Length: 218
Image (tube, rainbow, N blue to C red):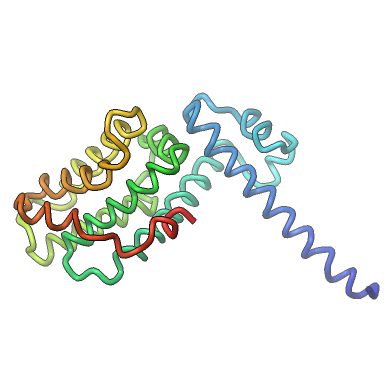
């Protein structure tokens, strides 16, 4: 390899290594905060779990709050993209919302660490910035705009729906809801809250997911 090629390759290797270290820190933050909660977790806990030097943390993040936001954004955007793919071809807004919830809960049944993290950081200030909230509001708003169901202001309804989903995911993690039933039961609960008819609920939650479970979990 020529000196010029080596010189060009060195910065690329450094960038890749930096990206890998950042990813390890975020993964470690998810694990540590899922176990301890955001308040109890320390930067030292995160760097030890990531097997990264304490000082190296500050090459990537300014504070614990900074990595909390980065980890939350990354996880919620990952989940949000998977949900978008799952519902992109569904015309009925109620079926789209139910499918989004079933996809989300299916992932939570297989990624309990992610579920615990979401439960632990659910009261984080500024939660509206994160992708899951925006997508849930979008899907509820579509039902309201289409007059598919009649319910009050979506700006208020989302709090009831979001809170109920979070509590049901907590019950799932605690083992109070069988994993095999959780996606359909939680989706049915939300449709019931919004006023859907029971016969239609049974039909909607029984529809096959338009994506394979393996694709959701990749």
